[in-house]
Image 1 (cartoon, rainbow, N blue to C red):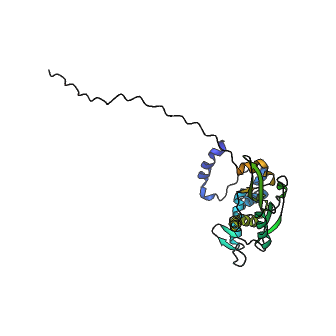
Image 2: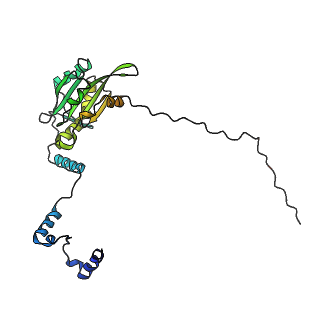
Image 3: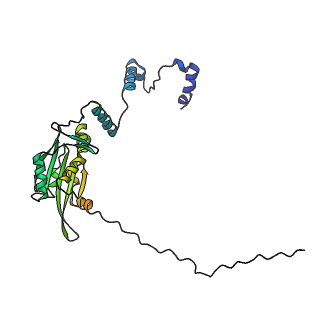
Length: 249
């Protein structure tokens, strides 16, 4: 404590302009040539970044490299994202979902061709749905969730965007995020009504309780309203009294 408090005084007495570098040493090896070389490398090393800061840095590097230029032959850029075209078999699967020929469709982005392709479609039970979510790549899913609510059988089409964390390349994460809104708009133009949009990290989230809560959130109980207490009853008009004159002596 004493050494730390007198350090600045010693530097001033010696002459701060003469000191070119400062090293904090805790063991003898820190003041050897090898220790000094390690210190110089540590000074030049970049500051540690969080995962979000690393992703932003990678995104800036990706954008500046010119790899994200828009090609008018394969895609269009909109205000809300990048619109990749749905391939014909993918569009056909959407129409079949609308006609209830099956209840599940999965899409993926072809990063090379810059298109949205059909991965698979068919009948999938709610129990099977979590296993349809890949753990090593992003996907878009459509699932027609048939369920009972308040005594009625309801079909609700759920759009699911699955992204398994930050382990995927930055280009894949960026494109799936950018293509989502234009894809939803395209699905709307094809005549599909989507009742709920979800974003998940893992298929384990897709339980019946989770879907029901997302589609039919429980209403919070309303607090009972209490009447404000009434004021005192009207006692009639206020009387105006004249101040009494004080007698003069």
